[in-house]
Amino acid sequence: MFGDSFKFVIGSLCVASLVLAAPAFGQKTKAQLNTEVGTTFPDQSTRQITPSGVRTFQNDLINSIMPTAPVISGNLACFSGTTGLLQDCGSAPSSAQLQPYTAANTSPASQTIQAQLRKIPVSCEDFGTCGTTDDTMNVQAAINYAAAQGRCFQFNRIYTLTTIIIDTVSAPCMNGRGGLIAKAGSVANALLEIKDSVGIVIDGNISLNCSGEAGVANGFKFWGTGANAAQYNPGLFFAAIAGCKNMAQFGDVSKPDATTFSENSFKVGYSYLNAGGLTVTGYQAVVNLHDSVLYINNTLFPAVTPYAIRLVGGGVQNTGGEIVIAGTSGAAVRIEAIASPTYGNAYGNAQMTNVLVESSTLASIANPDAVSSPLFGALMCSMCYGSIGTDVGSFISAASDFVGTIQMKGNRFFAGAARSNPNIAAASATISFDWESFGTNMLQGYAGVVGGIQRMTSKDLAPGVPHAAQSIVLSWPHSVPQQWG
Image 1 (cartoon, rainbow, N blue to C red):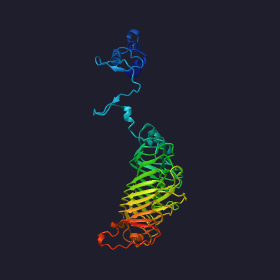
Image 2: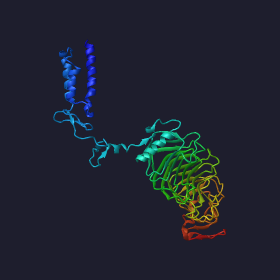
Image 3: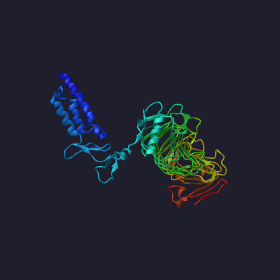
C-alpha cells in the first residue's frame, strides 16, 4: 500500500509541476490550483484518505512559486524582492529577446550577444558533415553565408571539392588552418575563384592543391568582368599552392579593359610542382607579389612552358622571395603584349627588387598573338641575384617590336660555366645596365648586350678603378646607337 501511495504522490507532483507553468500562458490561477489540491488529494470526509502531509506539501509548493496574481499572457514573470514569490513583471520581452552585453572593461560600447556571436567565424562544419570525398556543397554554403553576414570563413581541415566561387562580395575574409584539394575529375577555372569583389583578406595556414588535375586551370583565380570594381585587396596570402597547371591568375584575357584591377597584394609562402606561376592579364591589372617562393616545375604538365611570372599586358611588382625554374626551358619572367580596344595595345611591365633567381633565362619578352604595334612595356630589375643555369640562349631577350625599357642595375648574377650567349638581346628597346649586374662567367660590358639603345654610366665601366686611371675604348658594332655618360 505504501508503494502505491508513493507512486501516486510522485505522479501527482509531476502533474502539478506541469500545471504550475500554466499561468504564463493564461491557463489556471493559484487559487484554482489550490482548489484542485482538495479534489486531487481528498481527505477522509469524502470517504477517501490522503495523508495530510501530501496536501500540505502541494499547497506550500504552489504558494511558494506561483504569483500572487495571474501573469498576463505574453508578459514576463519575475521574482518579488520582498516576498520572494513570482509576480507579473508588467511587460513583455523585447522583440530581440536578447539583453545587452557589456565587456568587463567599461571603455568598449555595449553590444548585444547577437552582435558578439556574429564575430565568430563560419566553417564548413556548421553546414553538415565535412571531410568527405566531396565537400563542395557545404563549403560553398558556408562561404556564401559568411559573406552575407559579414563574417569570416574558417578553414578547419583540408576540404576535397571541385571549385569554390566568390562573386561580387565586399570585404570577405578567410582564415584558419587547412585548405582545398581538387576532387578527381574536377573541371574548373580554378580551385578557388573570386571575381568582381573588393577588400578581400585571405590569411592563415591555408593551402590550395590541384592534385595534378588537368581540368583545373588554376589554383587561384581573381578577376573582374567589368561589372564591378575588383581591386583594393590588401591581403591574399596562402601558405602553399601546389600541383597546378598554373598557380594563380589575376585578370582574364576576355576582359582586357576591365574595371581598374589594382592594389592587389599577393603572397605564397611556397609553391611547388606548378607548371606555371603567377599570370597577370589585362591593361589595368596590377599585382604586388612579395616574399614568395615560386618553384616552377612542369613535370605534371609537360606541354606547359614554365614561367614563374607571366604578364599579358599586366604589371607586377615583385619584392623579395625566390624564383626557381626546374629544367632549361621557360623563364623567370615572361612579358607579352595585349590588344586593348580602350587603351591601346601594350606590353606588360615587371619590376623586380631583391629577388633570388635560379633560371637559365631571366626574362623573355614576346608577342605570340601578333598584337599590332604594341607600345610601352618594361623590365626593371634591381638588387636581384642568383645563378644562371645552362647556356641555352640570351639571359634576357625581347621581340623586335618591343620598344619599351630594360633596366638592370645593382644586381649580382653569375654563371657556373663560361657563357657565350648575350646577357641582353633586344633590337628596339632602350637598355640601361651596369657592370656589376652581370658577373662571373658572363660577358662583360657592351660585349654582353646586343641591339637596342644602350646606356651604361661611366662610373660602372670598371668598378674599383678611379675614372682618371681608366683607359676607355668604346666600340659599337651594332647598327643601333649606344650612349655613354
